[in-house]
Image (cartoon, rainbow, N blue to C red; front, side):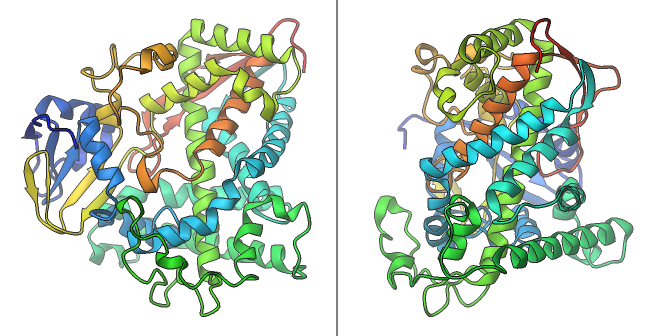
Length: 488
């Protein structure tokens, strides 16, 4: 922890009973960007509850790396677990270490290279469907692309377009009203209100679809995975049911880096526990599948949508993207091996996430009394985690509101403080699929840049979808015109 003195403050404008919920939900980027002016650690109100937002990169890094003290909890994760179960992204500290080890082999570099083939195929199928001049509603189109990709890399069987559309519809309803569910009093959640009924139907439908696809994927299981099956995420989860786990796995390295499980690591028989033979429970596999589906579709679609918007608004950055694609690919589709030779495209993705992080707000809860920025926080205090106050902090980034991919050139990042970029989190809970997601975004953007120019079409509404779990525009219409001499 840095020895420098930190400042603390309180955000003005809290409303009786609502606190800062209204500006946070209606204009979240603007509100969160305003917080550093009031201190490095700023108190805001979520309803009547006092919560604290780290606005300095060192404080944000401290809360993210010490996941034992700042555990995943609070209203955000209560709702997230009710929707997505107790998967690797939502589980508490006591379950996380074991779950991460269970899923980590699915994201080994050799598996990611195999997944890239699926990414390439799905991107090509989408772009081949476009005419010389195409107008698209960006987010739904790119969401379908990301969801088709993640279902093919997740499941042993190919999922039909109808099932993908069903999953997309269910996620859209469930996550679009996420923060409404989060802030609504529990008594109101139990009432048969139309929004509650839609939300409940969407979750039932989603869980039913996942269960059916899991049954189809495992129906032919013979005890040995084929070469093709060994390349997908589900095969890694299913393998945990076939081989006995090390009895000490739950806490084998509890002391490593101060982030061990601190307990037996086997849970208490609920979803997320292991059985006596060390195999993952079916309920846990279900929860991990829902987690990967959500994270692998919503975040990629949001990033691609905002990236294409920013490129449409910044012709010079778009021209450089096209020049890089032309130079590296010469008109052919991008492949996994091309990724290291597409540095500008990588910087475009990073800069997009800096400005518009898909996961824009989470909560952590202190498990013990702790001092943060000189302020004593009692056990049970809620800390709001958002990259925005750091990512758009003018004390860290020059012209922080501007889209400038070159700010991520090595010579310009060398002076940034630790924690200045937190688009994927950091520490033990850093996003397990960050390399997967970035690779998909780079391959998709390169494919588009190779053959199309991107512009904004009339009818766009880039205000964020209110109360949605992931930051995305209400409607972004893009005009894609085929570049002269760049036939598919």
